[in-house]
Image (cartoon, rainbow over all chains, first blue to last red; front, side, top):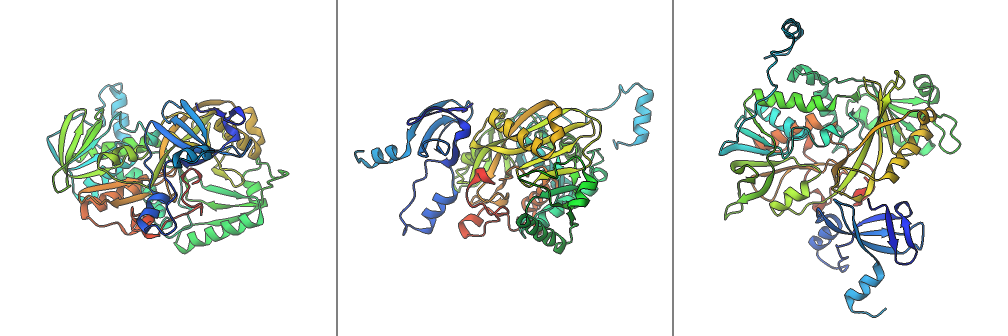
Length: 95
Length: 417
């Protein structure tokens, strides 16, 4: 039931140690992007039933932002990755 | 047939063997003027008011399970109109007024009980906030009373007044608030709609929304085949993103699960509805004696109608912190319902970019109390193509235009509303 999260830094930890920030898919637009782009980033959510990627902040542990990939119907957790690592690999930067 | 005391006596003499079903089980017709997707509280009340107030009776309500199988039967049955903002308060007061006449109106016992609600406050700042809210209510002609500590103690001596961290300083009372029997609300609306010619079609899941070349909706694909319609109305809160996607809508909604609990039956102890200002805990006692209570959502996105144990623990801790005696009661049942959490904590009753598609969604976890007004305003919108005055600010494009109705002042963070 998404009760245990395997933090890449701290190991298996209970859900209560984390603050959930929400959908990890929207990417922050450039400051001068159009109103429409900002509107979509701030307010519009795909909200899929099934596989979802969410930001979980390990507030009671390493305090890193993590991306948790899980199923929001079965609550199965597929992967937990450090958000910075994901962002670096997406931009092709080497950690 | 009109239900009455006389009917009950008459049927008692024949052993209650001749009661007729409260509604028909029709097969879908090939075309309706209006199709409402979702046979919960809001869909059924919409159908009822469409038929009764606006004379639109060629209507079908499509429900994927059985009537009232979703959140209308999964809430803590509280009705109230103690809101602050212009976009909300007149709307919820309209709902409260409809609640007050509801049972006579639809001839069904919904056990509406105006036992009052007290929102407790625990700090000077919170007192000021509640005084402000009470004043806002009174300026809209709604009853509100600020109680001091002794007045609260007289009413509810069992509360933890001397809590070391969160002492109770007083509360905001709305006497006209209370509770209603949630299932009966769905049944009453269903019966009222059915008797006016609305087809209530159960076990009929909508799997697609069919549109013509111009983008207009022509009907829906369902598990019982294609059904055509002139206007399509979505009242599928909890799954609005799923049904909205069928028509390509981009929505400001995340789906979350909220849990509710009921204890074993106890003698009368809690005279009203109480909310805890230091946590997000609310409790009342049903007429059967069970304590009905709940607290926060589970914080992570969920489409599962079941919750997490951590939230159960959190809820009970809050309850015991407020009412120490609660630690002796045993929980009988717990359940979860999935809801549309909108980006400002307020609902949406509006038209969509598609001309003949109407949207009722984003109820967060305040949808039950809104059931009558939501149905009335949605029916008004569908029948007249213009918003009801009290719902005019609950628009879909308010996010884009910067006119959010953010009652809690929490920003676009749906799991915090």
